[in-house]
Structures are given as C-alpha cells and as structure tokens.
Length: 81
Image (cartoon, helix red, strand yellow):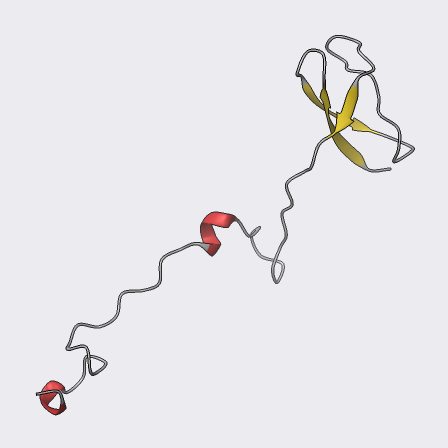
C-alpha cells in the first residue's frame, strides 16, 4: 500500500495518506472536503548504498584548474611562450 501526497482544492491544505486503491482520493483531513487531488512527489535515490543524492550535490562546482597559462595544464609553461 503506497503513501500518496494530496492537495485540497477548497482549503489549500496538503496531506499524505496511505491508500488501498491508486485511484482513490481521500477527503481532506483539515476541512473534510472531497475535492482533493494527487500531488507530484519529489524523488530521492541512493547511489551505491550511500547518502541520498540531492540536486545540490549534483550541481557542485568543478574543482579549480591548476594555475598556469591557457595553453598548458599548469606544468612547464616554457612551451607556451
């Protein structure tokens, strides 16, 4: 039995509910309205059994390149001059 997230059209409340039928939209626990709909849930995944991946970890800046001229990788710059 999956847990789905819902939103209420009348009061704007959001709630989670354990449901037996995927097509079921339970009434809002805050106001009792039957005008509810499923929300799109955020997804988290684990890579290699470690910590969950997040958008922040995927967008981490690349390490800084070693200093040097634009034509080499920071080693012997005598070939650039």
